[in-house]
Structures are given as structure tokens and as C-alpha cells.
Length: 148
Image (tube, rainbow, N blue to C red):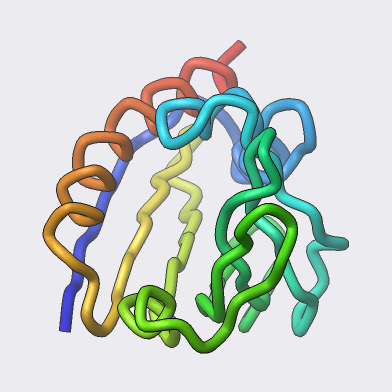
């Protein structure tokens, strides 16, 4: 079982950080270290499907397992999008399906502590190394946009 945690303190309200995390324009900006031009296609409601995609219609498929506005968002990974086709059953998908990406926002005075917990089943080392390198860069961008 793979588990990773990332934390950052941002000089902005929880509401501002939340809106920066999930706003269409800002989402594309802070997630650029993972994939240039990425976007999330969803209505951000608990139980809704999310397509995390790039410009080539490739990416991840998740469901919003829990959503408490301005406080907590949990994504459960379900599958992969390949050239616009949803895959829930391949060997590659089995490496991460059932994993979670959880975002917790805690107000600390006029700052917000953002904690991101990643947990998964059989995430391979290549994917993990990529994520470990990209997360800190993404969080720096998120912090900078949120504090504008």
C-alpha cells in the first residue's frame, strides 16, 4: 500500500484556496507540472465522475467520494482515459484503481494549511517518482495563485 502526503501553508482563506484548486482556469495553471493543458471535467458534486484530461484526451477517471466545500475533497481513482476511450479493466488501471487523492483545508488564522494525502494499491515506482517530483512544483504554483 502506497501512501504519500504533501503539505503547504498558503497566505489566503480556505475559500480562496478551494476556488483556486477547483476553478477551471486556475486548475489548469497549478496542475501544469503534471501535464501541460490539463483540465478536470466534472460538476464537482459528491458522487460525480471526474475526467482529469490533457489536450490529447488522455488522463485519469475518478469519482468524487466526498466533498465538503472549502474543507475536504476526496477522489477515488477508477480508470484511465486513452484517446477519449474510458478504460476500467486493463492491467495498467489495476495498478491505481481504488486509490484515493484527498485534499484537506484547515484555516489557521489568515492562512490555510492544505494537506494532500495519496493512497493507492500497486502504484509502480515510475509513476510514484513522477508524482513525487511534480507535487511540490504544483503546490508552489497553487500557493502563488492563491496569494495573488
